[in-house]
Length: 322
Image (cartoon, rainbow, N blue to C red; front, top):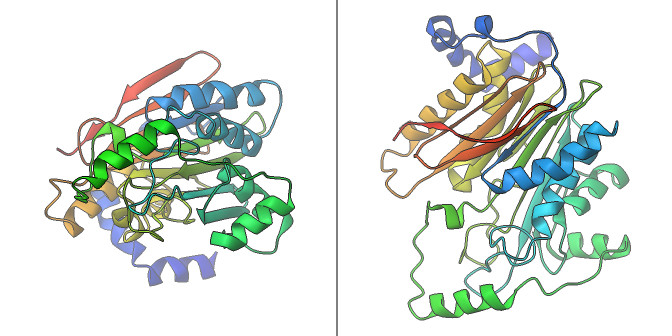
């Protein structure tokens, strides 16, 4: 515990304490009794993801298998233009995929800049289970995937190819914050045994520079899970999430007493301070603590998230700053 405190101090996380002591959003009002299993996912496609993943939990499966199944469902949908097959390409016309997965005990796996492999989240899970590493990238990640039975797939569909050709007429790169380019599906789960897990997958920002990697495959940025506290995941402009270690900071805020909602709000405000001109910027966070309490928050209006339990399956609009 002392080493953890030293680590927290090095990161400057003690700066959270004055805010926490004054915050009305402390953990005093939320449940500290473990609830039934629950899944929470980003955006409206989170309803589809949760439906697939929660079935595994209902049948007695693990949180880690549930989150993998949840995001695979979205990766396999060619109509979704921000994840997996059918995802928007980079400015050179290449679809490159990023993903990571993490368990509450700290086990995790990640792939980045992966091309021609449809399910990066499953490759990331294999990295976690079958290698001594956490992240594989590019050709190395592809080689590893194919050695484990994955097949090459043309990820550029006719629809996204047409959109890319239209973009080439102007080749104007302006980051978009609308729902057509939210570029990520992130899922967090608490299973029947009280185990936490999370997954995050994306095709990245449309028309990005070739080689660009966002927050989604980076443990601590796009996703972080700690069984002692809870889990958090991000969506939106990855550079802003990376520069603040967003998801890890949400979990640390919860560790220091904030509810999931207040923790997401606090880190969103931190990003706002770092990026005073946020006209073009959108970032959203979801969080789930070890007791099953959930929360979310975003910079801009428009972010929503899906919550699924044994008794409900609903899409919720997140609170926001602007």
